[in-house]
Image (spheres, rainbow, N blue to C red):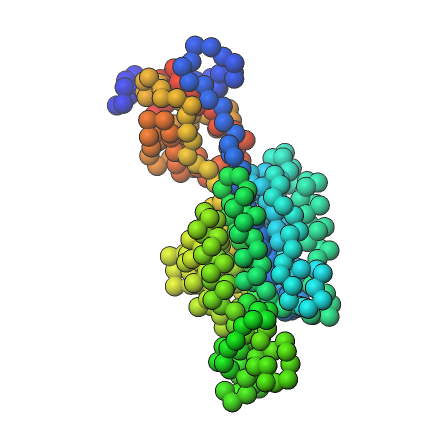
Length: 359
């Protein structure tokens, strides 16, 4: 039966073997040819010990749990790593962050498929537990210095790298900062209860040489995110409860980081565990999703091409199957792309030589 594009309605009996002959193209590709780097930059300042609304967990523990849940789902499709800030060795309370784990490919798909936590993720979870904020609640938010220190190391990674900043407060800890009372974080958060326009808590005139560390360190933070973007590294921004007073900066960081949402709030604001989990899953899935497949060569006859997700042939369709995007690349569409995004496919195989299955 002839099909409109010249192919016929034929369902092959599964894909040919990898070494099968007689096919001008027989490309077998893992769902991710090169796993992207998903890099978390996690706030562990003292305020992250505060409880997340409607949860028994602290903001830090809730963030850790959400990260682990996402990686349990998509870890096999990314290389993931993390830096926490401030660092664990933190005598000043404001030391820039330290790397917790350099990017490593997650556990095999078999763990995801079985709903289990693999050894790589278990080790990462233990590391996150060991660096939880101290019970004393000490620790500032050296966001700018931490991001700036990551520009070169992240740029040196091979492949695509995406950063995810999770924070609950304003960047501070810049000993070289100067600000008036309006840009002093104590004034911004507490107002007259802490300081007034006539008393600048961030001025060295208070008698404390560390007072400038309380300035809202917004410009250096924005500059660091911009520097990451200039090196090809996008930055997603997740604002935990407590960051609402600094939403203008978080919106700016999302814009500069190339990840702004098409909503009034450009970053990801989260108010509870459900919103946090949803935000991280959306971010992680967008990073790990690869629905465009490049072929090793141009097929001589584009009507003699079929695409298999594992052992299942999928039809050529602009809306639900696969479609040509260039003479040497196809794109998965609709349910086929969703299957890849959800981690339900281990490999894509493209075979030329049989009439195309058409929807």
